[in-house]
Length: 97
Image (cartoon, rainbow, N blue to C red; front, top):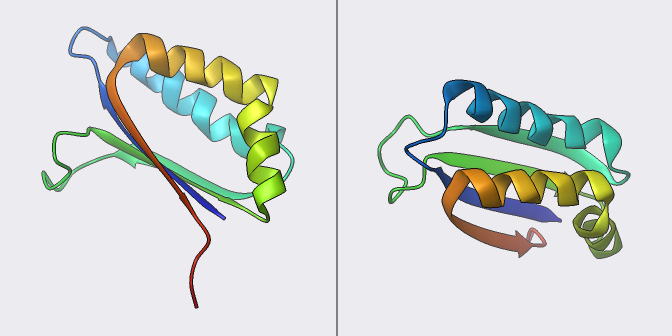
């Protein structure tokens, strides 16, 4: 499973709060069962359609995705995202081979 999130940081969010959010997102790799890999970063290409950051979380199964979505650590990060971002788009998919 791939969980892809694009989000836009609000203009009034401090660098410290941005770093805190990124750190909180990165911590999900260790704290949430079923996460195989996680990466997050700021767009540098200017081709992101206005989204400033991207997150990709790889999970083993759909059940792991459901567990991730309901995990308290994930829910806490979602609160930070709600407070610090203006836009977010999510795509969940199973890679086709």
